[in-house]
Length: 309
Image 1: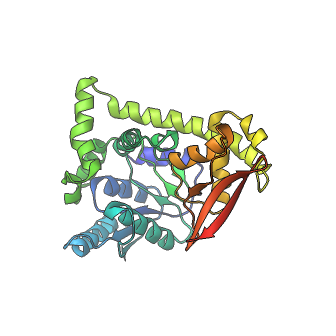
Image 2: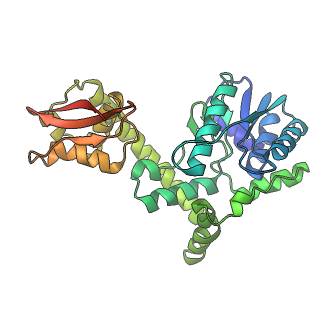
């Protein structure tokens, strides 16, 4: 485990200074904490979501285990989970916000494993979210570091046992009401059986390959986007390959206040370029409150405008 973390730090040329680790108390994050603390000064950041009656006790126990594992500091951060998108999305948003505020400029190690990556790819496939979603989680997305994306969960449990530490068993990880739980306990085991094993590793490899392709296409789109005006010329956009053009449109929309874009939004805006029949403007979600953002076509160019709600 420690070798995987050390190799990650070396391969990604992380600054040799202190770092943080996000610790839930579960096997994955506890194993990561043990490995990280053995390499350099480590601060454990323990986010207490307050979603379970014993959450304060779980957080306190995780703090104690972090100190036993060799962390130089361990901080419990209570958060309030609220907002749109359901409890999982709201908890994730609150967690990342808390980690960002507490990290004090240091990188944060996250304990996502190869199994988590496989589940993410399956979720993306099932939702038809496109290549960007199927590409899974990035190993390094500063300040977030995921050194265990090549490590199976079985190894994290073994690392905790070897260190003599007992990880917390989150009851949510066994609750079939959560999609990821059913993927983990029903879908992936069935796929492993039907396809004679190696499915999780294959899905993780797929994510890596797609991420490399995405990065290349994103770089091509960025080069085009840098020379794009406020109102892009439709004729120039038409000459681009489909995958590059939609990335250019995505970048243009995001740069002008769009947010939460889906494949449906992008294809509707793309149709203003490739399937023009005089159709009206396309509404896209935006960061502005009390306004709606629209992408339309006028005089051979695309334009964005907003209207009050």
